Length: 125
Image 1: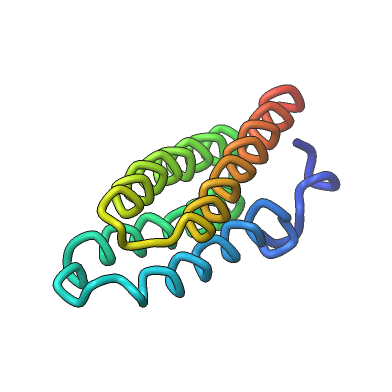
Image 2: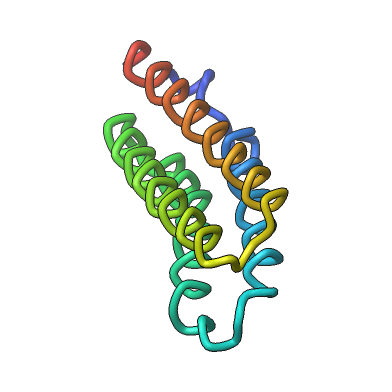
């Protein structure tokens, strides 16, 4: 990706903005989990949720496209963790079907966006 095509700031990236939205939604959702999960599932979900936009931001701030692609992979890994943790939360009855469906669709959307960003970076590199 040439310098003129590279976003000036990670905040310009729609995928980063969606990642922030997902993280906020997960913080709200986990606020209703049982208190005995505060240091367990809640902590894990929140850490993985914050990791998605954080990795996008760090990757965009790196000097090389290869590093950016590597951080996109880290964000994808965090999404896989979230998918697993949210499914477990649903199966344990900690979140409603509506919340689960909303968050799951956000995860799927972000995964697609990250894949598209990776393809764009690799083909222009």
